Length: 342
Image (cartoon, rainbow, N blue to C red; front, side, top):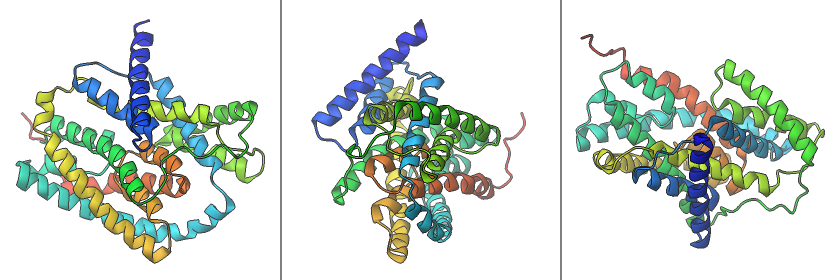
């Protein structure tokens, strides 16, 4: 009963955030509004968590939404992705070196704490490494959470400034039948569980994307996801991002917030420079490549791609590849230092 009450509270806060963001005309309000509102509530002292079944439902829904937009034309352009992956890997190296050095020089972080705080993604992996190294786990956690929240809020504004759209895609196209949605959901859940066992990043989201893509490309199913399912999924995603600040006091934030926002701005600027190289050389839309290169959360950035009505398959592929690259890159930069035994 307590969990139901807590869930109702966080969803109510998220909904208020979405309404306020919509009223003031903030970009991507169903994602950014809940993220900001729940973050503020968490810093104010509220203990906010979401039940994993609800989060998993939202992830699958967003994955299914992506699959409806994967067309034969999208598959045809996939031949350009390897070159983009190479530039993405280079950008991650530059981002980690530049931002970690900034943290050491401007904020006095030790080497390990700086490198782990600078890692542009893979939060759970980074925190597990922190426990084995002589690093300040609290600083790493807060800085990484600020990165995800800040990029979620900054990118829609940047895209709007560039003349892009950040509203939900039009439902002028035919929507999927309820039975088709239910069947794809069940298949997506099964695929997601399999991917989890195989340790695929963002397994449930990828599961929804794979099943939905297959059924649409083969013509088994047609139509897009209705907004009445997409909007709650984005709201839950925003609430999940904001819930990372639950229990974080203003005192805890004081020493890390400036560092977190500074490296987020620096990382975003560097990612944007590398994205511009790919956009120009491959003739791809800058908004699409920017969303694929910025170091935000995988699920949040893929959801953003749906909201921005750009190629979500391109974005998803790059963010999943980013996690695989970081799996090798972070230990490589850290070296083999272990926490001293006491």
